[in-house]
Amino acid sequence: MESFIIALGWLGAFAPVALGAIGSAIGCSVAGQAACGAMLDVESGYGKYIGLSAMPSSQVIYGIVIMFTLSGIGVSEATAGGLFGIGLMTGLALLFSAIYQGQAVSAAINASKNKPEVFGLSIAPAAIVEGFSVFAFVFALVMAGGITA
Image (tube, rainbow, N blue to C red):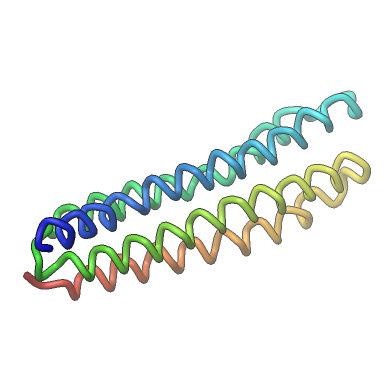
């Protein structure tokens, strides 16, 4: 039983980076597909679409930092539950926020290709979704500070 608990602790420590990477890949793919489609319809301004389609990649960066923080605590029977809970829940938050941010970016690209003057305003929903990733990131760091061996 002890080895299972330890395994859950390690799973929790690495879940934020794994789930954040999956979400970022999906989000960037969705946004990138919209960017490719937009480039067929416009004559210039391609760079802003490509740059915007990379926006969901930030969640994997948050996941990497959380992984290093959690794994630095050390996995033991005493810490495994906290590592698992914080890591899994934060990883899921990063996963879903990256996917939905990719959808918001896709919508922004589609809106701005038809009406370029709304480009700045159209990325606001994607920035709001990014805020939720930051909340999960900060809360994970704060909660990780409370895990004691």
